[in-house]
Every structure is written in C-alpha cells, then in structure tokens.
Length: 274
Length: 170
Image 1 (tube, rainbow over the protein chains, first blue to last red):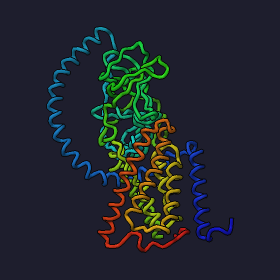
Image 2: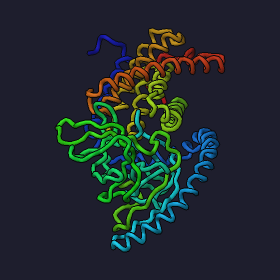
Image 3: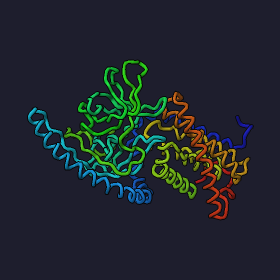
Image 4: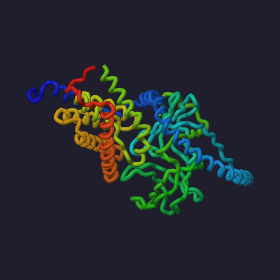
C-alpha cells in the first residue's frame, strides 16, 4: 500500500475512506437513530435567518396578495351572506333529522419558515410550536385546502408532514358522491398524489372535489384536499387509479393555519415526539 | 480555525438559501444544486481533504433536514469534494470551462444519487433523468456566472491563492 502515493495524499485518501464509511453506516442504520432533537435544534438555529431571508420575498408577494385578497373578500362577503341563510336552513334540517351538528373549526395562523425536500417538498417548518398551543397531529390548512399535519412539535416551532410525504395517508371522500378512498403520495414511476382503494364500481369524474372524510381519525371532516385530475385503472384492475391535484399550493407556502384536533389524552408535548 | 469558521458559515448559508429561496424553484422542477456548487468551490479552493470534509458536514446537515435516509447527501458530497479537490491540482481552476464542467458533473452526480433514494429506485428513470439533466444545466452556468461576478467584484480570483493542502488544519 505504501509506495504509490505521497503521505499527504494517502492521508486524504484515508480521511475519505473514513467519511465514506461513516456515511454508509448512517445510511444503513440512520432510521434507528433518534434525529428529532437534532432537527429541532437545527430548526431553532435557522429560524431567525429563515425569517430574514424570507422578508424580501414576502414583501413583494404581500403586495400582490393584498390586491387579490381585497377582491376576494368582497366576493366572499356576498357568498357568506348567502351561506349564512343556507347554514340556518341546514341546521334546522339536521335537527329535524336528528343528525349531529358539524364541529366548528378554530384556525390558528402561523408562518411557514422553510420547506424541506427536493424536488417536491415533503415537510415544512412552522413559526409556532407547543408554546403557542400547537399539538402533535393537528391538521394544517391554507385558505385553499389541506396541507398536512403536525408531525413534530418543539417549544417555539413545529414541523409539518405534508401530503407529499411518502409516509402520509389521508382518508378522503369525493364531494357530492361520498366515494371513499385513501390519499397517498407515490414517487414512482413519477411523483403524484393518488386516491387509492376506490373500487371500479364507484363513479368518479375528472374535476370533482376531494375532501377529508368523516372516517378520518386525524383530520376534521370536509377540508378540501384537491381535485380529480386523471382517472385510470390500477395494475390489479380492481380499483381506480385517481390522480389528485392538491388544492393548496404546497410549493409556495407562506402562511397556513393550524386546526386544533379534537380533545385527546395528553400523549404529545414539546421535544420533537414523532 | 478561520477555515473551520468559514466552512460552517458557508454550509449554513447554502442550507438557508436551499430551504428558502431555492425551494420554490425546486418545486417547479428547476433544481439549482447549491450544495454541489459550494462543495465544488470549497474543494477547488482548499483541496481534497477540506473538500471531502466540507462535503460530509454539508451533506449531514442536508440529510438531517430531509428527515429520511441519513447519509445519502453526506456520502456523495464527500466524494464530490474529494474528487474535485484532487482534480484541482491538475486543472486551471480559474478557467470558466473547467468550472462549468466540474459543476455540471458534480450537480448531476449529486442529484442522480439523491433522487434515486427519493424515487425509491430507478423505476421513475424518465423523471430522474429530466431533473438531473436540468439541474446540471442550470447549476453549472449559474455557478460560473456567480464565480465570475465574485471575481469581478473582488478584483481577484477565489482560487489564485489556493494552497495545495491535503490535511485539515484547524
């Protein structure tokens, strides 16, 4: 081994060997190493810098967004007046049918500090954490629709598992028809959100709205998730393969709302529990 | 010690830009591989030992941020840092064509390796090929342009005083 290279080059070769061995060791065993605390420390360290970098981007975006929101508020006020009447009517009808009333959602506004994952973001860091009342499992939405759920909570920050995380699964139903399915993100052969488990006997059309289902244990019912973009038969031939376009723009998240989940026994808390 | 401080600072800045400004572009399919870029620049400036060390540190931080497959960025960036550092002795480091080629190869190697994990294999090879090539084609010219601007602004090359160092000095 000794003769070929000068000592300095040999040393750098040994160094690379050590680095490669460490990286390979982590690749093989990394899933068993608790990383949440380290990520929490990293998120805490980067949070102030994230805010500074995002200021310029947010200022220009806020200007454009302001114009759009003014116009939207006007439209929504008109629609709210109409919906208020429909709501009263709906409550009366549900009461007469002895159906339980819908749970009112409270929204906690938060800022999205950073997105993680390339080319499609799979996680986001929020500017609020356990100190602000964010809890593990809370749903996260934008005005367009569902974004994901809180997967890790730290004292002043939280990390959201987006719909585009390969481990995410959301029980959904198709609006108006009530067809049930499970929304999953697949990466192969190309990254896409699929509504799975829908039998071929069920009728689904392109353009239909997909909402969170009442069967979901994690998400409140009726949150918009996306629209049907493409229909095909899956490889088994027994179920539909339904591609969903997400309602929320997951790549341009700036602000979001945390929707507190239903009251549960205290199993979560600060410290990056996953 | 100054080199170590600069290493940590550059790694932090690269990660910050990647998770904020560049994440929007990445989600639209245009991946500017800032990790490969800074690793190449660092390795060209400081040689293979520091190049591989920088690649490992930066890669580990990126792996922690990504939450899955700890070690995938670290391995390929350490190799890129080492390879570029070794090559830098035999190359004219200030030549834009050299920089272009090194950046292209580094970005392609890094993206191909990292995206293979992301896609769960090579089944989605069309998607992988498209993104890897686009990343190389975007990162390389942008990187060369940035290096040229730095040279123009500072009046001297980043690499002109580079010492051929093969062991880290702190």
